[in-house]
Length: 314
Ligand code: TXA
Ligand code: MG
Image 1 (spheres, rainbow, N blue to C red):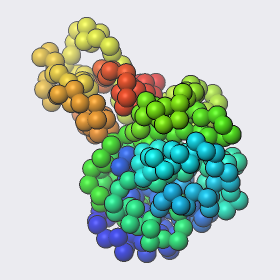
Image 2 (cartoon, rainbow, N blue to C red; image 1 turned 180 degrees about the vertical axis):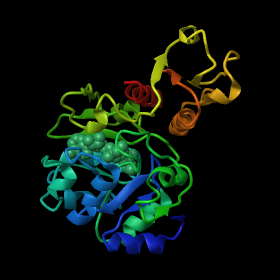
Image 3 (cartoon, protein in one colour; image 1 turned 120 degrees about the vertical axis):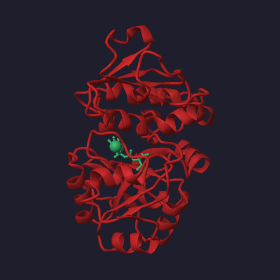
Image 4 (cartoon, protein in one colour; image 1 turned 90 degrees about the horizontal axis):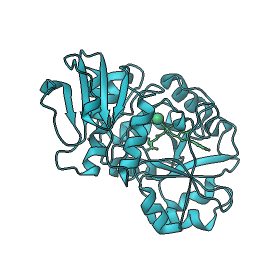
């Protein structure tokens, strides 16, 4: 059921049930992070392997010290500057975080989401919320309540409706063990903005064999239809009747109109990010054989968009 009833969401979470929540990045599937039984339901519903740790959502920067065992100076700076917002910090964890949440790692991923309803909810609870994106494991993340209802509507008791996600891409994940700052996942906060705040970062290349963050698995965020990346329209097959395409800003006259999805006709990268997952879902729903996706300019949020396309293509 989709609705705007905060009280209902609160009661369900207090009772150990799951609630799908809006955030500025994507919709999350939330449970009391300190309740192992509740967290187990997340893994069941998503069919997510338990070696893939969850992000813990906090109500504010002041909560950091309850869950992080040590807070390097850079972490404090970033939290104060970018929270609430699309940045997840991976820090040494305190005992209170169950091993199930962190998949047995001695670190925990923490963030404060920037969405009014969800923040109000978090502020009224006396526990933080573990929440992965509210999609079946490996599929495209949801950016609208209906996306959650389409796939998990039967198994999630309540979907809190906060409208379409403002950013549309998952948070940027930064690991800050010791003094080393490493980007584990490109996302809604640009690397440029992070580097402006704390200096040059290391980018951790993803691997399919031993992911540090399974969101870094080379195959993830994927539609069911095969997806291929193109850099130039000349790479499109000659026979275009049975294909769909995700274009950055301009339609292609050789393709049926309804088989094309334009991310942003005025080349606005934020708009493109916001529309990316809805576009992939739309194309995935068509009677076509495959999807072709055009890369976007590789800077700012464009890096995160291209990263998601690459993984969707694997
Ligand atoms: O924007 C977001 O981050 C959304 C919203 C709901 O907050 N959440 C999200 O969660 O994208 P999820 O579970 O789909 O992706 C979280 C990623 C996973 O790939 C996981 O491996 C990584 O965070 N992660 C969690 N804890 C970690 C840790 N201790 N060390 C390294 N990576 C971690
Ligand atoms: Mg996810």
